Every structure is written in C-alpha cells, then in structure tokens.
Length: 472
Image (cartoon, rainbow, N blue to C red; front, side):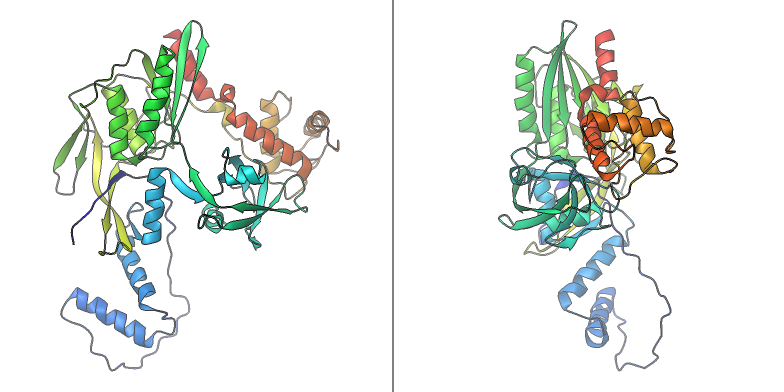
C-alpha cells in the first residue's frame, strides 16, 4: 500500500480520553481450552480478538473490536494530536480544511446547563429559519441537551445535507420554549475577513486570518487586492484565535508578505534530521507597514506565521504569548478503501532562528492584554438573583455594567448599588423594573455582552495596534 501523507500544522483538538478502570471486579478462574499465542505480537492480537469474539459477554462485532484496538494503539502514544480516524472522521477533517461543512451555521458557547448561541452566519440555514444570537438551545430533535458539551450538541445538529432538525430554544424566559425547524445545508466558512479605516491621514487596513485552509490564500489575495487598491499605508494582520491549518497555506501567505531566500522554518524528525522550508516564489512587493496581532489561542500554523513575520519580515508582534504547539501531523490511510486513517505527529518544527516553541509559544514584541474583556462571560438565566445574594453570575453582570459606565462593585455581592444599576438598565430596556437579575434581564444583558465583545472599539489589543501605528 502506497503511503499518502497530508502535512498539517494541526488545528488544536480537545481529545476526550476514555478512562478505563477495574472497580469491584469478580474474576473467573475457569481454564479455557485455548492455547495462548507465542509466535508474534500480531499472532497475540489475532488470538485476543478470537478469545473476545468467542467468550466476551459484551462482544458485538469484529468492526467495533478492530476500531477499539486501533484507537488503543494510537492512544498509547500519549499524544493528544495523534488520533485514529474512521472514514467519517477523516471526511470531517478534509471538509474543515476546504472550509465546507454541513450544518445550520451557528456558533455556541457554554452558559450553565444549556449552550447559548453567540453568532449566526449570514444567509445560513439558521439565519433563514429565524435563529438569533442570544437564544439558548434546550433540545435537538426532542433530545434534551442539558449538561452536554458543545461538541456533543454540535454532533446532534450535524448530519446529511437536506436533513431537517428541530431546534428547541428559549429567549427571555427559560420556561417558555419554542421549536425552530432548520434544514441542514453546506456552510462555507470564510477564513479571511478584512476592512480599512481612514485616520490621521493614514489608511489602515485590517486583515483577519481565522485559519489556514485550502482556500485561504485565494481569499487573501482577493482581500489584499481590495485593500491595496485603497492605497493603505499600514496593515494589521490578526491571527488571534487562529488554531492553525495547512502548512502549504501558511507558506503561500508568508510568501505574499515576505521576500527572502532564507528558510522560514525547519522540521525535525525523530532521527534528528532537519529539513528547511523556503518562501522564495512570490515577488509581490509590500509598500505598507505591517503589525501582527496574536494571543494565547494562536497556535501551530499561526505561530509559524507570527514568528516568520517577526524574524524575517521585522514586523512587530502585538498581544500575548501564543499557545506553543510546535509539532506537525500527517494523515496515513490504513487500508486501500480509505475507511480507516490515522493522524500522527511525525515532526517538530522550529522557527527561522532554529528555535522550538513547543509548550513555550511565540512572545510578543509589544505585550497587550485584552483588558476590556477580562472577566466577562455570559450569564446563566436559570435562576433569579436579588439583594443579598453572592454569585458568579452576579459578578459577570456587575463587570459588564461597570464597563458600560455604571458605578457599582464587581465582586459578585448583590448590594443596593447593584440593585439600582439593574433598575436603571431595566428602565433603559423598557422591561419590568424589579431590581432583580431575572431571566428577562439576563437575556438582554447577554445580547448586549455579545454586541460589546464584537465592537472593535472595545478591543483593547486592536486599539493598541492602532496606537502603535499612529505613533510610529
């Protein structure tokens, strides 16, 4: 079987490990009329499969047994980025790299026992069906999602194109639920966003790279053509929250911004051999200054991008130290039919200065915290909070109202100043003025928190980049 390897500078995965233990086990010492294997490890595996198939009470079929064995082998590596994949799992990966997925077009966030919808993609099935940011999902196809993880809820929603999902949501009263029917469709996720502003005789472009996928470079060239035709004087490239992607994609994008004959990175296998990577194909000229925004969620390919832009391009890095994922993964098919795959860490990568950033990250040249968002979170609407209560939900409401100009404490204790601030807020929202933090008030607070986070003027790291450009 010929090897087909697809190099990725892996998107961060949260691996849900299965912990197996022995609790109160009763052992049977009946002697089976089987002769243990002695010839090879392969024979032992075959023998174990035969024993389980013949004697195990819980045996179902050979396919499940093989899947479990393959998963166990990969998990024994203790590498969160090495994963055994079914054909369906592999297809999900390739769909993500191509920017296409089948779904309804929403993003979710944890918020107590039920997830809150934090954004809805324009023209998506969810948008067309009437789903809105700020709503809380209570059930999918009548299945209660209480205390489920975001990935579990997403798995319930995803499916085959054309499938109709019944999404049960609540708005300002968790006791009043209603159903919205949404037809699953292909969702194209753009990996590039851009805009520009005029300020102080400067035209400052903004380029957000959400991930490094197959189509990212073509999206980038289209965006940069638009910005360069505006004769921008400066450019902010934002890779905050970018979890990584394809090495080929980040190579092409670096080639757009940097002209050099030097290696931009090195990979190293377990035999110690180093391989340099170059970006000397593109002769595009950059006639504007660039700064790079990054944070602790910038990982893998975005760390390659940031380190190369600084070390080879001389561009400043603004924000926080990156995640520190200094490894590379490859896909390998395990059979000719492509029904089983494995993703393995095959190399580490080093920056152009031959430094490994694994578990260390790329440090900013200009540190900047996201101060306006520290402590902010969505508020759980399942309970009502009033004078004298102490709670994390109260603290989150206080922090947001304080940032909006209200004069009150922010330690989670519900005092009279908090009550008066909530009364003022309720009056402004034209809702029942009770002074209590009830579900109706929390619904509007959560919607306002969503708006606040998405307003660029509240983004302190972006503002730091603007200040640097204006004063440079």
